[in-house]
Length: 255
Image 1: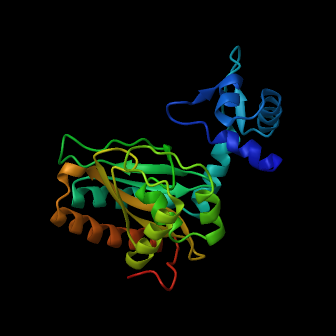
Image 2: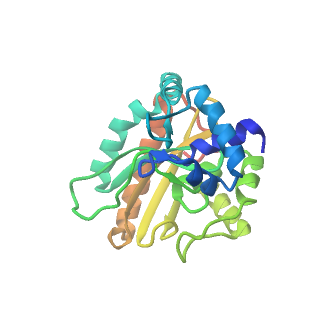
Image 3: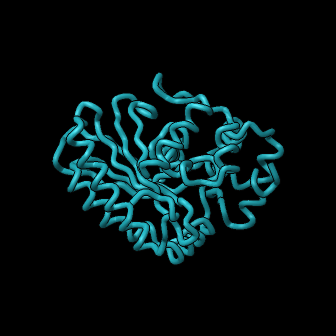
């Protein structure tokens, strides 16, 4: 792992429930030595990617992150475009919807919407990070990723989030092949027990999957008829989101 990659990987540990992180915690989370983390965070701070409050040595994300996020949204406006689609998809299916982007080793939720139809629902957080192998969103992205990227993800230690998480690379590759045949991924209890999730990939202008659109629901509320409704709605919404951000699916993507 190069120096730049190591430095940027430290930013991935910030989350809604962890907006500030001290040096000792960053050292523990990253498994790097303390001197290296201190040097890398110093370079990130000098570039504006992190900052420290007065009298507080904990790090938080800096203004340069907001600048890059604004540039990303200007060039690929998936966040602003997705909000209406998420709302309509949630209203149609009656369940939680969310859109995520793929990163080097994790998937990050960008935005979500809840339906008022049910009091019990799957809850989400914007900027929540999850794993590729255990989520329908991650698998939908992996199914249309470069083979080298898939190899890099599946060669890493794969965490068992629940008793139903697939961690065998060969079984995951078989599931990816099934997803390519249908254009849609689903997981049942893989990341959270009793949660059934469906997802479709979102493509950029280069035909590559940059993220995923998903519907997550309590497994007890997912009879076959409801699953059919969700799959059909997801296909329409995924195609609309890809089109609205200027993306194009690959020629072999099932229509």
